[in-house]
Image (cartoon, rainbow, N blue to C red; front, top):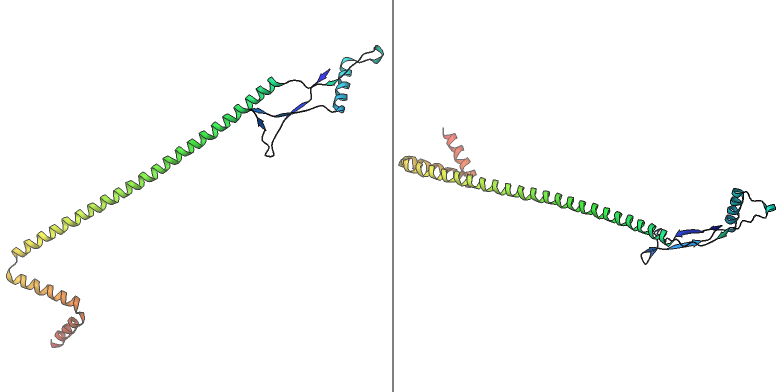
Length: 182
């Protein structure tokens, strides 16, 4: 009876398979003498070995060529690696697309906010300009319709306000003097 040994895939220090020329390296380990004796005993028991009949059982460790089996195993391993790589790249692509979408939303919202603020500022300035023009027009209309005495009174009032702003102590002293005279 011929029994094959054990084929182990070689691994590097990181625990990954060593790949040489596109094939996973394997190492053949023959069976130990004890394993061969156990196999011989099992076979003798299975066939009903009888030494008196001059039965003979021979168990030999033979290295069997498993190239086609190894090619299939390697092909499956590399397909699994390829699927894993495609899956990871797909996830990275989806994450990148999601990131671009989020950035696009943030940037577009900021642009919209700035545009809205600019429009509000322009509207506010336009409103102020309209109010200023309306005030100027009212003042011009008021100047035309005012009599000489009303203009004089308005000028005196403006002078008094300006004096109060520029010399508040003098105005306060003047008011005290008027109050004492009465």
